[in-house]
Length: 243
Image 1 (tube, rainbow, N blue to C red):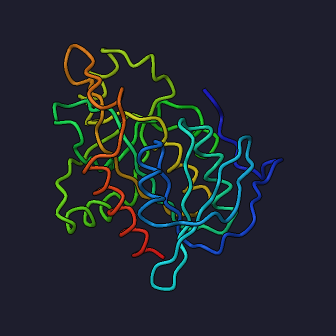
Image 2: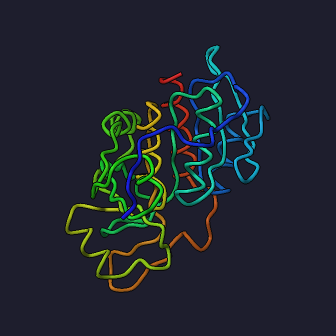
């Protein structure tokens, strides 16, 4: 088990200030493309934390909001969020797809309220625990409710091992209240807590692990759908409230 050491790190993240209090991030090309299209965001900076990530910004009601595409997986997603925080961002809104652990139609909106820490990155940001609370889940759910979006609320399983999601582990975590599986949330929340920043997230179900056999559903042919449009609008609305 990794021992959490609460002391100053040797390397400090750095990025030019993007003059934005809030950032929206998406993980999939189709979602990110829709986000850029709707907002009309313009290039602002480049994050260089192991791989180049372009940061775009747009303005709403006189407030600037940043947009960036997060790499998939906890280590890279957290490293990129560290840089965006160093660029002056206080609130990060992240949304993307997930796998369903319960029987629900594809493109169901999920609001996770806790995350099972089956990844390594979060243990560098806080002591070992089984779960981490997703502290802004109530606010995310209220915004989606107010927007007329039906949601499921429950735990999420954050894993590094996409190809080692076993039936035994899936059933075990479903019995503990997890309804979704993804690869970043527990680590992003831990990093946000460590930096005293705020993290908000929701998902749309793509594939399903709820039955005996894996159901790929949308995950093998990801493209913008009505649900994508609704999700992008909800993320923008939340960012506007926070800005």
